[in-house]
Length: 447
Image 1 (cartoon, helix red, strand yellow):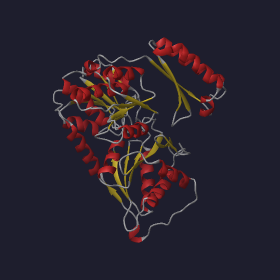
Image 2: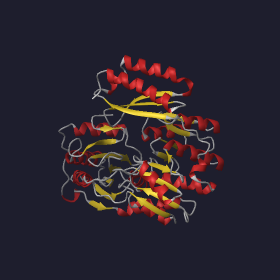
Image 3: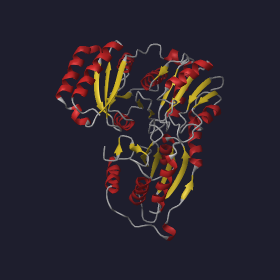
Image 4: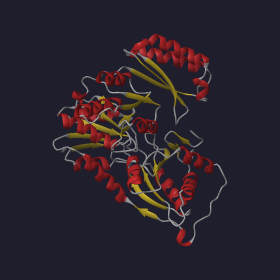
């Protein structure tokens, strides 16, 4: 991580941590960095529904065009659609303007390379240096000045791609969609209706300030109630930029990313399409996922938290399925990043292909009680290396034994330490977390 870019882009409060000047300078950098003699740089841009997105989009476009680059606007769309269009239409790069699951007053700039992947560290480092410099590249003049181009057709092409992946008609299936008042507010309903589903949508009335507000994948209880109230067959909840998807089964129970990985890996194994491949999960995934996959003989790799790390490990291992408990799921044959809409399609495929409800698909999955608590600190690294904190963690791990585990990690986007424990019982996990939290609070670094 650098001064501006964390594990998932440049994110912060709009016009405080992330300003229109930053967006303009980013446009200047991209237009200059990707300039090729005799050929225009082309950048595809999407945004979610935050009010500040228009300000950042305009500033970014100004920086690009005055540097001689063309900006292609997908308008309100998903992160995955920007990645898809950047890859299939040969753009030099893509930018998604979103702070994902954060509140509306935050925003962010995610950089995507020409292959639809998270931007390489080399480019991010060069961008960081440019943002902190007084460098002013030459301005384009006359016919060299770039243009801003409406590219809503790219968004429609992405929707068409998703529709083409469906292997079953959804006719007769009652589906709940929680669009988080975000990027998926139109795309999700259009997708499921096109495939024949009976759609019951919530979180599809964005006003610039209600993104993620009591809805979406960070407030799954809203969709749970919706599924129960309308007796729906399944529910899907997306986050602000729709790169995550969590589910609700037909009984109104939550289904997280680990459970999605399990049910789809098992489905692929039974169909014979998994082969010798396995699953890439993160260190935050539930112990139940690892044990359940082990029973099926499906190998599982662990990596650090962040879908970019999951994707990198998938590339290294050749595995075609990976993701996070939070709902970032990557289907390697079809996408290069987490895609909430694609995830919902694949869960439907598993249900319809096996003629089972989501609850039935997860009957043999054993989820370990997990306790996760966050504490705000002034120095994350100092806390993680503090001897009293390490001693408390070691003592908690010893008490948990082989039937549990303990994890401390720093957030990639906030001044937060995450303390997580899993055990056979909730009480044991909570006790372990509280012991470590007490040591952190005594360290003097909490804020």
